Amino acid sequence: MTAQDHSGSGLSRRKLLGAAGVGALAVGAGGGYAVGQASGEPKAPAGVVDPDAAPIPFEGAHQAGIVTPSQDRLYFATFDMTSDKREDLISLLKDWTAAARQMTQGNDVGDFGAVSGSPYAPPEDTGEALGLPPSGLTLTIGFGRSLFVDDKGRTRFGLEGRLPDRLKNLPSFAGDRLDQAISDGDIAVQACANDPQVAVHAVRNFARIAFGRASVRYSQMGFGRTSSTSTAQVTARNLFGFKDGTANIKVEDAKDVDDFVWVHEDDGPAWLVGGSYLVSRKIDMRIEIWDREPLEGQEAIIGRTKGSGGPRSGGDEFADLDFDAKDETGKPLIDTKSHVRLAHPDANNGAKLLRRGYNFVDGSNGLGQLSAGLFFIAYQRDPEKQFVQIQRSLAGLQNDTLNEYIVHVGSGLFACPPGVGTTGYWGEKLFA
Ligand SMILES: C=CC1=C(C)c2cc3[nH]c(cc4nc(cc5[nH]c(cc1n2)c(C)c5CCC(=O)O)C(CCC(=O)O)=C4C)c(C)c3C=C
Ligand SMILES: [Fe+2]
Image (cartoon, rainbow, N blue to C red; front, side, top):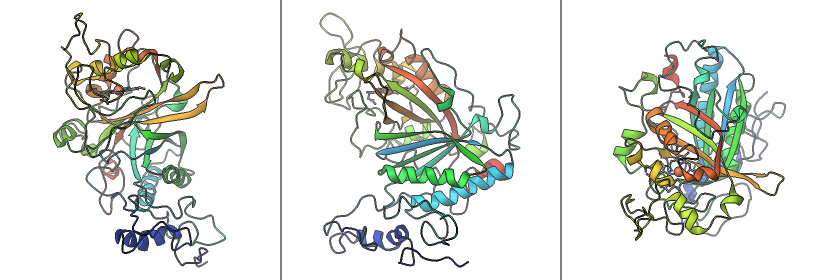
């Protein structure tokens, strides 16, 4: 059966946008706004340039979605392999890479996409992103320890000798209340975009492609980035109302990115060089209790002011934290149990993280309380020296006073391979 076009255009609407729309958008005032023109959708005023029309490159030395300036939305999912065949894992990674190349550039999945294939076969693309621009979509994957060894320590998928030493199970921390159903997984997929529909479309198509080889273990929507990863971005706020990400590693800090984010040759293993480790923590936030805390108390707990985000020791948002500064009674202006003091590199052998978390609200719990929190994501070169070190300083009611208002309910650690070139696939060096 020859592929037919059912869009009436000879190409899917998304492909039309990719082929003609972006060029037209780049014309700006002269060319006006092309989104929807081919499909007869409403036109935006002439001269409006859609910032989401230009895709983020998929190929590169590192995966996109790590130091990429944080997009507004997250859809995170982990998958478990349902096949134990090495060839299925390899073919899945190849198929996902091909689909990611297409979707991140604003195209449909497959040769015929959502509406141009045979009417007698399920479409290759699920279709809910038709007509939408790339929206800054990045897809980033990571491999969990369970992809390499089963719970009895037996090697999986012939990956003998490939398990990174640093891909250990995270230790349990004081106060953890982890639910296994929303923790771990063989493969993690982080989809970030400025349009949630585009992020969901990507993960949904991955799940569809994976059928018979892997299935979704859990997934989490996130809205509202809680970190900036570029100095060009304004600092967003978390659901406690505080600016979050002020002291984050930013892509412009080349030395910090190199020292704290990417795996180096002498860190090993060879297949992971240029990659990074992703830690995810689903953290419930007791919003209603926090909202009854006076402003002074909230600021003391964080160690920064709520308005400007500046340190309690004084200065604007980006002023250095002065841990020696005291009030007239001799009390430290930045409380000894405050979040920023305990998370700071000075308290953690110099450790830093590249944070990339998102707010979430999963509805309410039936008691009139929001089921809300922070889906914490952090990238790093060495999880033990970075996330584990910092979380050990923070965890427990005797440490970070923020712990009265938060509880960690989900967790994961994943080794994210380096980026791919024009012909490679995600993780290919793992199988070489
Ligand atoms: C183990 C790592 C961290 C967890 C878990 C974590 C949870 C968490 N954080 C906030 C709010 C803020 N965090 C801020 C700073 C900050 N947090 C961490 C690490 C973890 N946070 C670090 C390394 C830092 C930077 C410390 C520094 O060097 O100064 C801030 C201040 C603004 C900022 O610098 O980003 C806020 C606010 C919440 C609400 C939360 C759990 C729900
Ligand atoms: Fe924090």
